Length: 150
Image 1 (cartoon, one colour):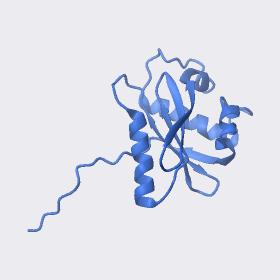
Image 2 (cartoon, one colour):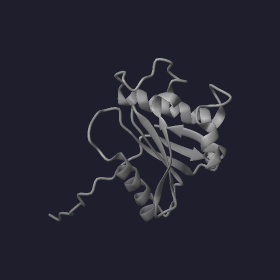
Image 3 (tube, helix red, strand yellow):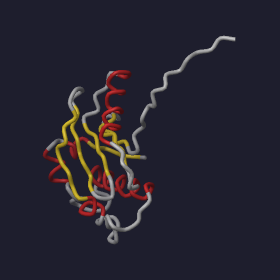
Image 4 (cartoon, helix red, strand yellow):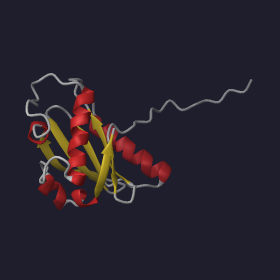
């Protein structure tokens, strides 16, 4: 019997992915609602590096999100740069008025609210001016986003 040794490396998957108007990946993310010590920025960077090394694709944006903060990064294929950090409640209270970083929240619900925000940035389904759209327009994100999904 032949046995093939598989690598022990875990491949990270994006929790929420956003696409541009041409159907290309625009943003990958990691979302955590739990209070655990974990470097989710490194996990996002692993996703970006994997896409670049294996698929020759540069995904220009990344996001990490916790109950406390949302970080938006830009990626050029070599360097991951944090360009914005927002308090999560400033963004998500538009979609859940009772949202608070102190309130117990499950990861799936946090992902759902974030997906709604990204989709609102894409097509203004809820508001004419989604939270933080001005900041994200400055880096070219809002003009490119077409859709997002978990």
